[in-house]
Amino acid sequence: MPALNGRLPPGQVVTTKWPVLHYGDVPRVDLKTWTFDVSGRVDRPFTLTYDELLALPRKTVRCDIHCVTRWSRLDNGFEGVPVQRLLERAGVQPDARYCLVTAEQGFTTNLPLSDLDRP
Image (cartoon, rainbow, N blue to C red; front, top):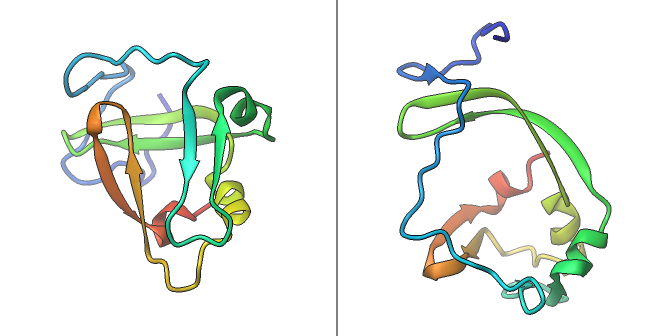
């Protein structure tokens, strides 16, 4: 287990498992018709197919995950397209403050752009 050195927020418990918490059934997605859409307060809205998204430059990062249900998992590796590149491509307008993320089965969440745009 990695050294904690202040990495564990108060009340959290470290796990090496990957707890799966999901609302409803895990959706089946047809990757031939799936799209990633960026619109709203942007200068250049765009849509990407799954293959187009996979073709973009990728980055690997390591980070800790702290869930609101009180578990923490340290040193997780993730690979994907940095959201900063997608925001740059869209040309986010200066007065935009939030991003509405819409997922399968109607799940949505609002994220401050200041959080979403952190490296």
